[in-house]
Length: 137
Image 1: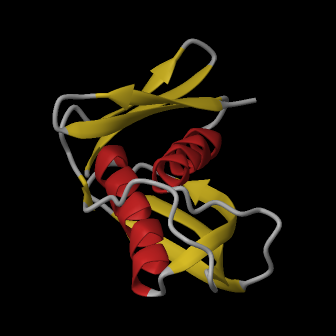
Image 2: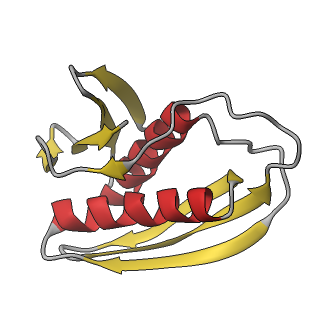
Image 3: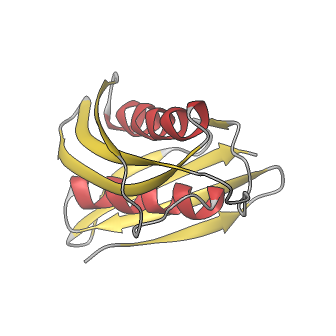
């Protein structure tokens, strides 16, 4: 089973994700992002959106994946009810998010402007995978 940690940084906030598989590490990193933005509501019903991104390598695929999740959340002023990472290869990530209406619920997290390449890492770690990414707040 994976996990994530939020990493404090002078001007940004980082996320370190862990998982037995690449998919689980990407998922945990996504949960870290949603923890920062305060937008994860697994009790909500919403609309399923497929995500498929392609980057030049694993790190770029992670940045593109998180950027797409952030875009869906921001562009719809929405909450995220579910995240599934179906597959991750050397250059792609595929999965889906369920986007739910925010309604009258006030924002409780920190707005994230962008996902950065600062200290980006996707690597094998022990029996699984570790990711690290910083977000611009």
